[in-house]
Length: 243
Image 1 (tube, rainbow, N blue to C red):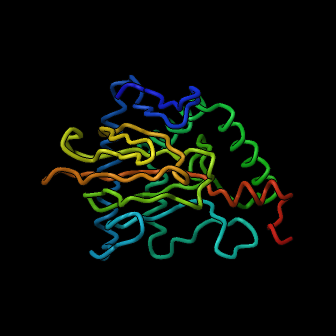
Image 2: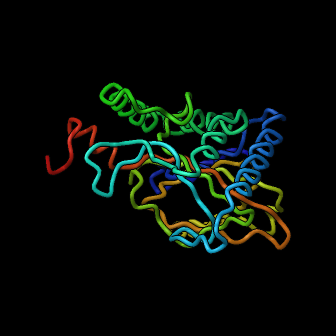
């Protein structure tokens, strides 16, 4: 639960176990977020066979994306799930969790945080109709991972900013000593990952996965990230690579 950086041979911070605030109300607040996400997930009536490259669980992204032939960044359209996603994005408990992750990012990687902030400011000035998920978060996109037994396959998130970090927060009623650990494969690290804890990793470059929660336990996760394509589009003077 206490913050701890992961450093390389040159003492450069490459990932951070950011833990959680010392405020005793934070853990219960994250449990409220867990209950809300579980409730909305049940209302969504996801298919049982929701399998993708990250794992066997329903996942919904919300926020600003860029890629797959887009000429400009745009806000994801969540269709029939829009009401559910909007409810979660407006949740006080979820907002608090997202805000902590961004503030912690600024503490551990201030130059990266500033880099994100600068590009977002330019993006919103160029495309003022775009809206952030959370007013005090530097991450333009987030993912709600539903289902109650969330654990990921071995993977990398190759569309995320390759040198930046994504924020992953574990949520649920589970024994973190018996399951839900995160594995950072290239670093050969196997890390306990308790409820309400946040970890920052360069998810596009470090292969990562989880082990399943113990039988009978409930675990989900919430992530925030920055698509590398947005940074490139802004850096190109609001143009595609081809342009």
